[in-house]
Image (cartoon, rainbow, N blue to C red):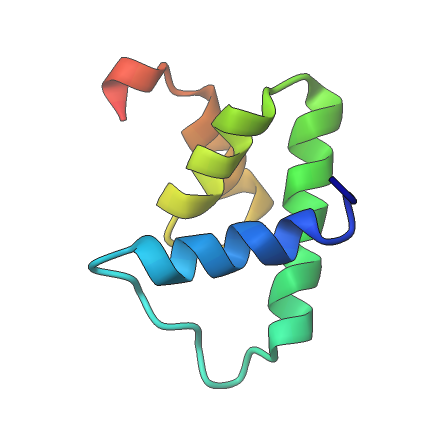
Length: 80
């Protein structure tokens, strides 16, 4: 799959499948959100996390902050 489209797919999946989804802030344009998701995805991928763990992380975190994503993805799966 094209890595450029992957953040958009993850974002769309997370937004469509989350029952208690937190809406995107009105001031955040979709392009900026996609760029943040792509950045976080790329950094976590380069750090050695699996695609499955990264996608789970991006669906679970409440903010698009790299520190929050690192905290979440570094927590053992049975603790989340």
